Image 1: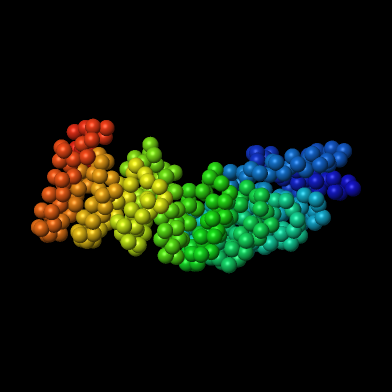
Image 2: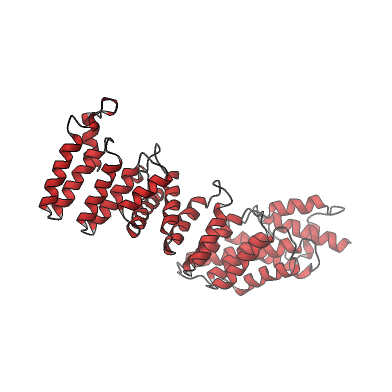
Length: 383
């Protein structure tokens, strides 16, 4: 009993050393007995040790001393109740040490010592029902990832999501599963994993990223309508005043919105082009920012010198929204697209249509919807 109490005290001291600057260590584990002599080691002591162990030391010297102390403890206390926690913390410290060494060496590859993996594996074998095995499995999967062993990393992640459905690491585990499948070009499995992330709710940190990668997985599976739906959901999350406007965003959010918008237009081009956009909004519901989608597709056509398709796309928006203040600008782009494509007869026809549509006696100038001169000017520039 005395030996067990002493060993528990030793580990409490070790765990506390991970979260504060330690006093000079005794040279042996036995000399730790002189540091404190409580009558007994309680469950509260064990809980305090677990809480203290959540912080790793930031100083390299502290970490090295902690590693050596954990090693001595595990060697001399093979049956301690705190052995499981000591094994995990020792593996974490060694893992962190190897990561720091790789960063200092500016190495593209990182060699994780086999002993780190062995410690995590041993911990799982010896304590298969331990409540924090999700953390062990998470770290184990990372270690295998660093060693380019994708299959072993995936096994650890699969075990994590299967055995720990309430883990705070669940969303990241599902997302990493999705990333692994995506890299392996298994887009169906990737999509399923990303959907598992989305099922955890919008408050999940990985929600937007999972939504984005789900859309691309669906796109790679040629599920263009589903992909467009998912990309549109993502774009709605970043909408500014209920309008898709990537230029109003900054940084990574802007880049992702711009990429999503390009993907939406590309998906429509693989369907029926402008007709597909019209059908989409007829079935999904009309929006005030439909012009953004039509314009994106038309501009992509222009970039490929598909001038007739571009004009058709601009014209489709005008047909669907003849009284919208952006319609005149879109019709002007119909004219310009035909001009760039060297279709003189179509240019003339488009000009005549412009007059018919926007003559002062036309429905466009209905008093209830009459746009201002500034609005018309802005619409022609935006289009």
